[in-house]
Image 1 (cartoon, rainbow, N blue to C red):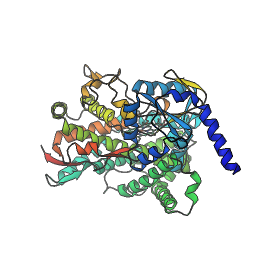
Image 2 (tube, rainbow, N blue to C red):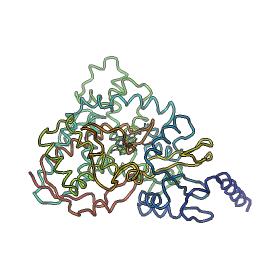
Image 3 (cartoon, rainbow, N blue to C red):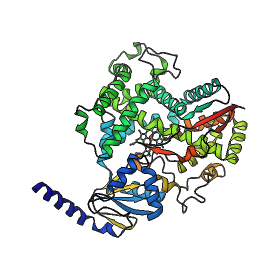
Image 4 (cartoon, protein in one colour):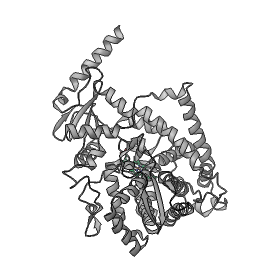
Length: 486
Ligand code: HEM
Protein backbone atom coordinates (compact mmCIF):
# COMPACT_ATOMS: atom_id res chain seq x y z
CA UNK A 1 0.00 0.00 0.00
CA UNK A 2 2.79 2.41 1.03
CA UNK A 3 4.79 1.45 -2.05
CA UNK A 4 1.79 2.13 -4.28
CA UNK A 5 1.34 5.55 -2.67
CA UNK A 6 5.03 6.38 -3.11
CA UNK A 7 4.83 5.31 -6.75
CA UNK A 8 1.82 7.52 -7.30
CA UNK A 9 3.55 10.45 -5.61
CA UNK A 10 6.63 9.97 -7.79
CA UNK A 11 4.42 9.87 -10.87
CA UNK A 12 2.62 13.04 -9.76
CA UNK A 13 5.92 14.90 -9.12
CA UNK A 14 7.26 13.93 -12.54
CA UNK A 15 4.05 14.98 -14.21
CA UNK A 16 4.38 18.44 -12.61
CA UNK A 17 8.08 18.75 -13.43
CA UNK A 18 7.33 18.35 -17.13
CA UNK A 19 4.27 20.63 -17.20
CA UNK A 20 5.92 23.09 -19.61
CA UNK A 21 5.82 20.41 -22.34
CA UNK A 22 2.04 20.09 -22.14
CA UNK A 23 1.56 22.89 -24.65
CA UNK A 24 3.31 20.90 -27.39
CA UNK A 25 1.38 18.69 -29.81
CA UNK A 26 1.11 15.15 -28.52
CA UNK A 27 -0.62 11.95 -29.68
CA UNK A 28 -3.69 10.97 -27.58
CA UNK A 29 -2.51 9.15 -24.46
CA UNK A 30 -3.60 7.10 -21.45
CA UNK A 31 -3.65 9.13 -18.19
CA UNK A 32 -1.22 6.77 -16.43
CA UNK A 33 0.66 4.87 -19.12
CA UNK A 34 0.98 7.74 -21.57
CA UNK A 35 1.79 6.43 -25.09
CA UNK A 36 3.51 3.30 -23.81
CA UNK A 37 0.86 0.89 -25.20
CA UNK A 38 1.15 2.37 -28.72
CA UNK A 39 4.95 2.34 -28.56
CA UNK A 40 5.09 -1.28 -27.36
CA UNK A 41 2.68 -2.34 -30.08
CA UNK A 42 4.79 -0.56 -32.74
CA UNK A 43 7.98 -2.23 -31.43
CA UNK A 44 6.25 -5.64 -31.41
CA UNK A 45 5.03 -5.08 -34.97
CA UNK A 46 8.58 -4.01 -35.91
CA UNK A 47 7.23 -0.71 -37.17
CA UNK A 48 8.58 1.82 -34.68
CA UNK A 49 10.23 3.94 -37.40
CA UNK A 50 6.92 4.09 -39.29
CA UNK A 51 5.10 5.04 -36.14
CA UNK A 52 7.36 8.00 -35.38
CA UNK A 53 7.17 9.04 -39.02
CA UNK A 54 3.34 8.99 -38.99
CA UNK A 55 3.24 10.97 -35.75
CA UNK A 56 5.63 13.58 -37.25
CA UNK A 57 3.35 13.94 -40.25
CA UNK A 58 0.27 14.37 -38.05
CA UNK A 59 1.76 16.47 -35.25
CA UNK A 60 4.40 18.57 -36.99
CA UNK A 61 8.17 18.93 -36.72
CA UNK A 62 8.32 18.97 -32.93
CA UNK A 63 6.03 17.05 -30.61
CA UNK A 64 6.11 15.14 -27.38
CA UNK A 65 5.06 11.62 -26.50
CA UNK A 66 5.01 10.01 -23.09
CA UNK A 67 6.24 6.76 -21.62
CA UNK A 68 4.19 6.91 -18.42
CA UNK A 69 5.15 10.28 -16.94
CA UNK A 70 8.46 10.40 -18.88
CA UNK A 71 8.32 12.80 -21.83
CA UNK A 72 10.14 12.22 -25.09
CA UNK A 73 10.61 15.25 -27.28
CA UNK A 74 10.55 14.16 -30.92
CA UNK A 75 12.22 16.22 -33.65
CA UNK A 76 11.95 15.79 -37.40
CA UNK A 77 13.74 18.68 -39.10
CA UNK A 78 17.24 17.61 -40.16
CA UNK A 79 18.91 20.94 -39.25
CA UNK A 80 17.16 21.04 -35.87
CA UNK A 81 18.30 17.46 -35.15
CA UNK A 82 21.86 18.19 -36.23
CA UNK A 83 22.14 21.41 -34.21
CA UNK A 84 20.45 19.95 -31.15
CA UNK A 85 22.89 17.04 -31.04
CA UNK A 86 26.00 19.12 -31.76
CA UNK A 87 25.23 22.07 -29.45
CA UNK A 88 23.62 20.08 -26.66
CA UNK A 89 26.53 17.65 -26.43
CA UNK A 90 29.08 20.47 -26.68
CA UNK A 91 27.64 22.52 -23.80
CA UNK A 92 26.77 19.40 -21.77
CA UNK A 93 23.03 20.15 -21.59
CA UNK A 94 22.34 16.88 -23.46
CA UNK A 95 23.97 13.51 -23.02
CA UNK A 96 23.23 10.26 -24.77
CA UNK A 97 20.62 8.44 -22.75
CA UNK A 98 22.11 6.02 -20.23
CA UNK A 99 19.60 3.34 -21.21
CA UNK A 100 20.89 3.23 -24.80
CA UNK A 101 24.52 3.40 -23.67
CA UNK A 102 23.92 0.56 -21.23
CA UNK A 103 22.24 -1.40 -23.97
CA UNK A 104 25.25 -1.04 -26.29
CA UNK A 105 27.80 -1.93 -23.60
CA UNK A 106 25.87 -4.75 -22.07
CA UNK A 107 24.72 -6.40 -25.28
CA UNK A 108 28.25 -6.35 -26.74
CA UNK A 109 29.59 -8.05 -23.62
CA UNK A 110 31.57 -5.03 -22.32
CA UNK A 111 32.52 -1.41 -23.03
CA UNK A 112 32.33 -0.28 -26.68
CA UNK A 113 33.04 3.10 -28.32
CA UNK A 114 29.40 3.73 -29.11
CA UNK A 115 28.40 3.08 -25.49
CA UNK A 116 31.03 5.38 -23.94
CA UNK A 117 31.26 9.09 -23.24
CA UNK A 118 33.96 11.46 -21.96
CA UNK A 119 37.52 10.15 -21.55
CA UNK A 120 36.51 6.50 -21.97
CA UNK A 121 35.07 7.37 -25.38
CA UNK A 122 37.90 9.69 -26.36
CA UNK A 123 40.87 7.33 -26.11
CA UNK A 124 38.97 4.64 -28.00
CA UNK A 125 37.83 6.99 -30.76
CA UNK A 126 41.32 8.56 -31.08
CA UNK A 127 42.83 5.09 -31.48
CA UNK A 128 40.54 4.00 -34.32
CA UNK A 129 39.99 7.33 -36.14
CA UNK A 130 43.16 7.23 -38.29
CA UNK A 131 42.51 3.63 -39.37
CA UNK A 132 38.90 4.28 -40.37
CA UNK A 133 39.56 7.67 -42.02
CA UNK A 134 39.48 7.96 -45.82
CA UNK A 135 43.27 8.22 -45.98
CA UNK A 136 43.71 5.30 -43.58
CA UNK A 137 41.41 3.20 -45.74
CA UNK A 138 43.08 4.19 -49.01
CA UNK A 139 45.71 1.47 -48.50
CA UNK A 140 42.96 -1.15 -48.19
CA UNK A 141 41.03 -0.30 -51.35
CA UNK A 142 42.28 -3.49 -53.04
CA UNK A 143 40.74 -5.59 -50.26
CA UNK A 144 37.36 -3.89 -50.62
CA UNK A 145 37.62 -4.26 -54.40
CA UNK A 146 38.32 -8.00 -54.08
CA UNK A 147 35.43 -8.49 -51.66
CA UNK A 148 33.04 -6.80 -54.11
CA UNK A 149 34.42 -8.93 -56.92
CA UNK A 150 33.61 -12.03 -54.85
CA UNK A 151 29.97 -10.91 -54.79
CA UNK A 152 30.05 -10.43 -58.57
CA UNK A 153 31.48 -13.94 -58.98
CA UNK A 154 28.70 -15.41 -56.82
CA UNK A 155 26.02 -13.74 -58.92
CA UNK A 156 27.76 -14.88 -62.11
CA UNK A 157 27.80 -18.46 -60.82
CA UNK A 158 24.00 -18.40 -60.38
CA UNK A 159 22.03 -19.49 -63.49
CA UNK A 160 20.80 -16.44 -65.39
CA UNK A 161 17.27 -15.44 -64.42
CA UNK A 162 17.32 -17.28 -61.07
CA UNK A 163 16.17 -15.22 -58.09
CA UNK A 164 18.91 -14.12 -55.71
CA UNK A 165 18.33 -12.59 -52.28
CA UNK A 166 20.89 -9.82 -52.35
CA UNK A 167 20.66 -8.73 -48.73
CA UNK A 168 22.50 -11.82 -47.39
CA UNK A 169 25.10 -11.41 -50.15
CA UNK A 170 25.77 -7.86 -48.96
CA UNK A 171 25.85 -9.03 -45.33
CA UNK A 172 28.61 -11.47 -46.28
CA UNK A 173 30.45 -8.70 -48.14
CA UNK A 174 30.43 -6.23 -45.25
CA UNK A 175 31.29 -8.83 -42.63
CA UNK A 176 34.19 -10.19 -44.68
CA UNK A 177 35.55 -6.69 -45.25
CA UNK A 178 35.34 -5.74 -41.55
CA UNK A 179 36.96 -9.03 -40.50
CA UNK A 180 39.71 -8.68 -43.08
CA UNK A 181 40.53 -5.04 -42.29
CA UNK A 182 40.17 -5.25 -38.53
CA UNK A 183 41.36 -8.80 -37.82
CA UNK A 184 43.43 -9.70 -40.89
CA UNK A 185 41.23 -12.70 -41.78
CA UNK A 186 41.62 -13.63 -45.47
CA UNK A 187 38.67 -12.57 -47.59
CA UNK A 188 38.29 -15.79 -49.47
CA UNK A 189 36.49 -18.54 -47.49
CA UNK A 190 38.85 -21.21 -48.87
CA UNK A 191 42.05 -19.42 -47.83
CA UNK A 192 43.05 -20.19 -44.25
CA UNK A 193 45.50 -18.33 -42.08
CA UNK A 194 47.74 -19.51 -39.28
CA UNK A 195 46.60 -16.84 -36.84
CA UNK A 196 43.16 -18.18 -36.06
CA UNK A 197 39.92 -19.77 -37.29
CA UNK A 198 38.28 -18.78 -40.58
CA UNK A 199 35.27 -16.47 -40.63
CA UNK A 200 32.05 -18.50 -40.60
CA UNK A 201 29.63 -15.85 -41.76
CA UNK A 202 26.42 -17.61 -40.72
CA UNK A 203 27.63 -18.42 -37.21
CA UNK A 204 28.90 -14.91 -36.57
CA UNK A 205 25.68 -13.47 -38.00
CA UNK A 206 23.59 -15.66 -35.75
CA UNK A 207 25.57 -14.51 -32.70
CA UNK A 208 25.16 -10.89 -33.80
CA UNK A 209 21.39 -11.37 -34.16
CA UNK A 210 21.16 -12.69 -30.58
CA UNK A 211 23.20 -9.72 -29.37
CA UNK A 212 21.17 -7.13 -31.26
CA UNK A 213 17.95 -8.67 -29.90
CA UNK A 214 19.41 -8.27 -26.41
CA UNK A 215 20.30 -4.64 -27.23
CA UNK A 216 16.68 -4.00 -28.16
CA UNK A 217 15.36 -5.58 -24.98
CA UNK A 218 17.65 -3.55 -22.72
CA UNK A 219 16.96 -0.36 -24.68
CA UNK A 220 13.26 -0.92 -24.08
CA UNK A 221 13.50 -1.66 -20.37
CA UNK A 222 14.85 -5.17 -19.67
CA UNK A 223 17.23 -5.10 -16.70
CA UNK A 224 20.89 -5.99 -17.13
CA UNK A 225 20.77 -8.64 -14.38
CA UNK A 226 18.12 -10.59 -16.32
CA UNK A 227 20.93 -12.19 -18.28
CA UNK A 228 21.74 -14.18 -15.12
CA UNK A 229 18.28 -15.78 -14.98
CA UNK A 230 17.90 -19.39 -16.14
CA UNK A 231 15.92 -18.44 -19.27
CA UNK A 232 16.36 -19.47 -22.88
CA UNK A 233 17.05 -15.85 -23.86
CA UNK A 234 19.85 -15.61 -21.28
CA UNK A 235 21.32 -18.93 -22.41
CA UNK A 236 21.25 -17.77 -26.06
CA UNK A 237 23.03 -14.58 -25.07
CA UNK A 238 25.83 -16.34 -23.18
CA UNK A 239 26.27 -18.82 -26.01
CA UNK A 240 26.58 -15.96 -28.53
CA UNK A 241 29.19 -14.15 -26.42
CA UNK A 242 31.13 -17.38 -25.85
CA UNK A 243 31.11 -18.10 -29.59
CA UNK A 244 32.42 -14.61 -30.41
CA UNK A 245 35.14 -14.96 -27.78
CA UNK A 246 36.27 -18.27 -29.20
CA UNK A 247 36.22 -16.83 -32.73
CA UNK A 248 38.33 -13.81 -31.73
CA UNK A 249 40.56 -15.24 -28.97
CA UNK A 250 43.59 -16.53 -30.88
CA UNK A 251 44.02 -13.39 -33.00
CA UNK A 252 43.59 -11.08 -30.03
CA UNK A 253 46.09 -13.08 -27.96
CA UNK A 254 48.57 -13.09 -30.81
CA UNK A 255 48.24 -9.32 -31.32
CA UNK A 256 48.75 -8.76 -27.57
CA UNK A 257 51.80 -11.03 -27.67
CA UNK A 258 53.20 -8.96 -30.54
CA UNK A 259 52.75 -5.81 -28.46
CA UNK A 260 54.32 -7.22 -25.35
CA UNK A 261 57.22 -9.05 -26.98
CA UNK A 262 60.32 -6.99 -27.71
CA UNK A 263 61.31 -9.43 -30.47
CA UNK A 264 57.92 -9.36 -32.10
CA UNK A 265 59.49 -9.33 -35.58
CA UNK A 266 60.45 -12.96 -34.98
CA UNK A 267 56.90 -14.15 -34.34
CA UNK A 268 55.71 -15.69 -37.64
CA UNK A 269 52.54 -13.98 -38.91
CA UNK A 270 51.04 -13.31 -42.32
CA UNK A 271 51.49 -9.83 -43.87
CA UNK A 272 47.70 -9.43 -43.83
CA UNK A 273 47.61 -9.88 -40.07
CA UNK A 274 50.59 -7.56 -39.56
CA UNK A 275 48.75 -4.88 -41.56
CA UNK A 276 45.45 -5.41 -39.74
CA UNK A 277 43.90 -2.59 -37.71
CA UNK A 278 43.98 -4.84 -34.66
CA UNK A 279 47.77 -5.18 -34.64
CA UNK A 280 48.25 -1.46 -35.28
CA UNK A 281 45.77 -0.34 -32.62
CA UNK A 282 47.02 -2.72 -29.95
CA UNK A 283 50.59 -1.63 -30.61
CA UNK A 284 49.83 1.99 -29.78
CA UNK A 285 46.96 1.76 -27.25
CA UNK A 286 47.98 0.04 -23.99
CA UNK A 287 44.48 0.42 -22.51
CA UNK A 288 43.21 -2.30 -24.81
CA UNK A 289 43.26 -5.84 -23.47
CA UNK A 290 41.71 -9.15 -24.44
CA UNK A 291 38.38 -8.50 -22.73
CA UNK A 292 37.65 -4.95 -23.92
CA UNK A 293 38.74 -5.86 -27.44
CA UNK A 294 36.23 -8.72 -27.70
CA UNK A 295 33.39 -6.32 -26.98
CA UNK A 296 34.82 -3.55 -29.18
CA UNK A 297 35.09 -5.83 -32.17
CA UNK A 298 31.64 -7.32 -31.52
CA UNK A 299 30.46 -3.68 -31.52
CA UNK A 300 32.09 -3.04 -34.92
CA UNK A 301 30.47 -6.12 -36.39
CA UNK A 302 27.13 -5.00 -34.98
CA UNK A 303 27.50 -1.42 -36.23
CA UNK A 304 29.10 -2.15 -39.58
CA UNK A 305 27.48 -5.25 -41.10
CA UNK A 306 23.72 -4.91 -41.58
CA UNK A 307 23.87 -1.11 -41.85
CA UNK A 308 25.84 -1.03 -45.08
CA UNK A 309 24.27 -4.26 -46.33
CA UNK A 310 20.66 -3.03 -46.06
CA UNK A 311 21.67 0.33 -47.56
CA UNK A 312 23.06 -1.53 -50.56
CA UNK A 313 19.86 -3.57 -50.86
CA UNK A 314 17.75 -0.40 -50.83
CA UNK A 315 20.06 1.20 -53.42
CA UNK A 316 19.72 -1.70 -55.88
CA UNK A 317 15.93 -1.44 -55.53
CA UNK A 318 15.93 2.32 -56.04
CA UNK A 319 18.05 1.97 -59.16
CA UNK A 320 15.69 -0.63 -60.53
CA UNK A 321 12.70 1.68 -59.98
CA UNK A 322 14.44 4.77 -61.41
CA UNK A 323 15.59 4.01 -64.97
CA UNK A 324 16.80 7.58 -65.58
CA UNK A 325 19.21 7.39 -62.63
CA UNK A 326 20.18 3.83 -63.53
CA UNK A 327 21.09 4.80 -67.13
CA UNK A 328 23.07 7.83 -66.01
CA UNK A 329 24.96 5.80 -63.39
CA UNK A 330 25.67 2.99 -65.82
CA UNK A 331 27.02 5.24 -68.54
CA UNK A 332 29.29 6.90 -65.97
CA UNK A 333 30.65 3.52 -64.88
CA UNK A 334 31.10 2.47 -68.52
CA UNK A 335 33.18 5.62 -69.01
CA UNK A 336 35.33 5.72 -65.88
CA UNK A 337 35.26 2.13 -64.60
CA UNK A 338 35.52 1.64 -60.85
CA UNK A 339 37.82 4.56 -60.15
CA UNK A 340 36.38 5.88 -56.89
CA UNK A 341 37.59 9.42 -57.52
CA UNK A 342 35.33 9.62 -60.57
CA UNK A 343 32.29 8.04 -58.96
CA UNK A 344 30.71 11.05 -57.23
CA UNK A 345 27.38 10.31 -58.86
CA UNK A 346 27.35 6.78 -57.46
CA UNK A 347 28.22 8.16 -54.01
CA UNK A 348 25.28 10.52 -54.33
CA UNK A 349 23.06 7.52 -55.15
CA UNK A 350 24.14 5.99 -51.85
CA UNK A 351 23.40 9.23 -49.99
CA UNK A 352 20.03 9.64 -51.66
CA UNK A 353 19.17 6.04 -50.74
CA UNK A 354 20.11 6.78 -47.14
CA UNK A 355 18.01 9.94 -47.12
CA UNK A 356 14.89 8.00 -48.11
CA UNK A 357 15.78 4.73 -46.35
CA UNK A 358 17.83 5.53 -43.26
CA UNK A 359 18.61 2.13 -41.79
CA UNK A 360 19.91 3.34 -38.41
CA UNK A 361 16.64 5.01 -37.55
CA UNK A 362 16.78 4.58 -33.80
CA UNK A 363 20.33 3.97 -32.63
CA UNK A 364 20.51 6.86 -30.12
CA UNK A 365 18.48 9.19 -27.96
CA UNK A 366 19.55 12.08 -25.75
CA UNK A 367 18.66 13.17 -22.24
CA UNK A 368 18.59 16.73 -20.82
CA UNK A 369 21.03 17.01 -17.90
CA UNK A 370 19.56 20.40 -16.90
CA UNK A 371 16.72 22.68 -17.93
CA UNK A 372 17.50 23.80 -21.46
CA UNK A 373 15.97 25.32 -24.58
CA UNK A 374 15.53 23.38 -27.83
CA UNK A 375 14.08 25.09 -30.89
CA UNK A 376 12.78 27.88 -28.61
CA UNK A 377 11.00 25.42 -26.32
CA UNK A 378 11.75 25.19 -22.60
CA UNK A 379 12.83 21.61 -21.99
CA UNK A 380 13.01 20.47 -18.35
CA UNK A 381 15.90 18.41 -17.01
CA UNK A 382 15.35 14.69 -17.50
CA UNK A 383 13.40 15.03 -20.77
CA UNK A 384 14.52 12.57 -23.43
CA UNK A 385 15.11 13.82 -26.97
CA UNK A 386 14.60 11.54 -29.93
CA UNK A 387 14.16 12.08 -33.66
CA UNK A 388 12.53 10.53 -36.66
CA UNK A 389 15.26 9.96 -39.22
CA UNK A 390 12.51 8.98 -41.69
CA UNK A 391 10.60 12.23 -41.30
CA UNK A 392 13.86 14.22 -41.39
CA UNK A 393 14.97 12.66 -44.68
CA UNK A 394 11.61 13.44 -46.26
CA UNK A 395 11.27 16.99 -44.94
CA UNK A 396 9.89 19.12 -47.81
CA UNK A 397 11.39 22.35 -46.45
CA UNK A 398 14.88 20.87 -46.63
CA UNK A 399 14.74 18.58 -49.65
CA UNK A 400 12.75 19.73 -52.66
CA UNK A 401 10.49 17.00 -54.08
CA UNK A 402 11.36 14.86 -51.08
CA UNK A 403 9.64 11.69 -52.32
CA UNK A 404 11.64 11.69 -55.56
CA UNK A 405 14.88 9.79 -55.94
CA UNK A 406 17.18 12.60 -57.09
CA UNK A 407 20.87 11.86 -56.43
CA UNK A 408 21.74 15.12 -58.22
CA UNK A 409 20.66 17.07 -55.13
CA UNK A 410 23.86 15.92 -53.40
CA UNK A 411 26.09 17.36 -56.14
CA UNK A 412 27.06 20.86 -57.10
CA UNK A 413 28.97 21.12 -60.36
CA UNK A 414 29.93 17.48 -59.97
CA UNK A 415 31.34 17.95 -56.43
CA UNK A 416 29.74 17.08 -53.05
CA UNK A 417 27.05 19.60 -52.04
CA UNK A 418 27.74 20.26 -48.36
CA UNK A 419 24.83 22.68 -47.96
CA UNK A 420 22.28 19.92 -47.51
CA UNK A 421 22.16 18.29 -44.09
CA UNK A 422 23.14 14.63 -44.14
CA UNK A 423 22.45 13.18 -40.69
CA UNK A 424 22.02 9.52 -41.55
CA UNK A 425 25.46 8.73 -40.10
CA UNK A 426 24.61 10.70 -36.94
CA UNK A 427 25.96 14.10 -35.82
CA UNK A 428 28.51 15.52 -33.44
CA UNK A 429 31.18 13.59 -31.55
CA UNK A 430 29.60 10.20 -32.08
CA UNK A 431 29.09 10.57 -35.81
CA UNK A 432 29.73 7.20 -37.40
CA UNK A 433 33.32 6.00 -37.26
CA UNK A 434 32.67 3.71 -40.24
CA UNK A 435 31.19 6.33 -42.57
CA UNK A 436 34.16 6.40 -45.01
CA UNK A 437 34.27 2.59 -45.07
CA UNK A 438 30.52 2.28 -45.65
CA UNK A 439 30.63 4.85 -48.45
CA UNK A 440 33.57 3.15 -50.20
CA UNK A 441 32.03 -0.33 -49.90
CA UNK A 442 28.63 0.78 -51.13
CA UNK A 443 30.00 2.91 -53.99
CA UNK A 444 32.33 0.23 -55.24
CA UNK A 445 29.75 -2.55 -54.98
CA UNK A 446 27.14 -0.56 -56.89
CA UNK A 447 29.68 0.42 -59.57
CA UNK A 448 30.56 -3.24 -60.14
CA UNK A 449 26.93 -4.36 -60.26
CA UNK A 450 26.15 -1.64 -62.80
CA UNK A 451 29.14 -2.60 -64.88
CA UNK A 452 28.40 -6.29 -65.15
CA UNK A 453 24.65 -6.80 -64.78
CA UNK A 454 21.14 -5.73 -65.60
CA UNK A 455 18.69 -6.61 -62.85
CA UNK A 456 15.03 -6.78 -62.11
CA UNK A 457 13.29 -6.30 -58.78
CA UNK A 458 11.33 -9.54 -58.29
CA UNK A 459 8.71 -8.04 -55.94
CA UNK A 460 8.71 -4.61 -57.57
CA UNK A 461 8.05 -1.58 -55.36
CA UNK A 462 6.70 -3.86 -52.59
CA UNK A 463 10.31 -4.59 -51.57
CA UNK A 464 10.63 -0.96 -50.50
CA UNK A 465 7.23 -0.84 -48.86
CA UNK A 466 7.33 -3.96 -46.71
CA UNK A 467 9.97 -2.87 -44.26
CA UNK A 468 10.55 -3.90 -40.69
CA UNK A 469 12.68 -2.70 -37.83
CA UNK A 470 14.68 -4.53 -35.24
CA UNK A 471 17.72 -2.56 -34.28
CA UNK A 472 17.80 -1.40 -37.91
CA UNK A 473 15.24 -0.99 -40.67
CA UNK A 474 15.45 -3.77 -43.25
CA UNK A 475 13.55 -5.12 -46.26
CA UNK A 476 11.29 -7.97 -45.07
CA UNK A 477 11.81 -9.97 -48.28
CA UNK A 478 15.64 -9.62 -48.13
CA UNK A 479 15.53 -7.99 -51.57
CA UNK A 480 15.10 -10.67 -54.26
CA UNK A 481 16.60 -9.67 -57.63
CA UNK A 482 16.99 -11.42 -60.99
CA UNK A 483 20.28 -10.66 -62.72
CA UNK A 484 21.29 -10.88 -66.38
CA UNK A 485 24.87 -10.52 -67.52
CA UNK A 486 25.29 -7.44 -69.71
C1 HEM B 1 25.36 2.67 -44.07
C2 HEM B 1 26.11 2.25 -43.07
C3 HEM B 1 26.11 2.86 -41.69
C4 HEM B 1 25.18 3.66 -41.07
C5 HEM B 1 23.85 4.15 -41.63
C6 HEM B 1 25.69 3.96 -39.75
C7 HEM B 1 25.05 4.79 -38.83
C8 HEM B 1 25.62 5.21 -37.66
C9 HEM B 1 25.04 6.20 -36.77
C10 HEM B 1 23.71 6.91 -37.00
C11 HEM B 1 25.89 6.36 -35.73
C12 HEM B 1 25.73 7.34 -34.57
C13 HEM B 1 25.19 6.67 -33.35
C14 HEM B 1 25.12 7.62 -32.17
O1 HEM B 1 25.01 8.82 -32.34
O2 HEM B 1 25.15 7.10 -31.06
C15 HEM B 1 27.00 5.45 -35.93
C16 HEM B 1 28.06 5.30 -35.06
C17 HEM B 1 29.03 4.34 -35.22
N1 HEM B 1 29.25 3.52 -36.30
FE1 HEM B 1 28.14 3.52 -37.98
N2 HEM B 1 26.89 3.32 -39.59
C18 HEM B 1 27.19 2.64 -40.75
C19 HEM B 1 28.34 1.89 -40.99
C20 HEM B 1 29.33 1.62 -40.09
C21 HEM B 1 30.49 0.79 -40.31
C22 HEM B 1 30.84 0.13 -41.65
C23 HEM B 1 31.19 0.73 -39.14
C24 HEM B 1 32.47 0.00 -38.80
C25 HEM B 1 32.86 -1.13 -39.27
C26 HEM B 1 30.48 1.55 -38.18
C27 HEM B 1 30.87 1.76 -36.88
C28 HEM B 1 30.33 2.72 -36.05
C29 HEM B 1 30.85 3.03 -34.73
C30 HEM B 1 32.05 2.35 -34.06
C31 HEM B 1 30.06 4.05 -34.21
C32 HEM B 1 30.20 4.73 -32.86
C33 HEM B 1 30.99 5.99 -33.00
C34 HEM B 1 31.16 6.73 -31.70
O3 HEM B 1 30.38 6.49 -30.76
O4 HEM B 1 32.07 7.56 -31.61
N3 HEM B 1 29.36 2.06 -38.78
N4 HEM B 1 26.82 4.78 -37.12
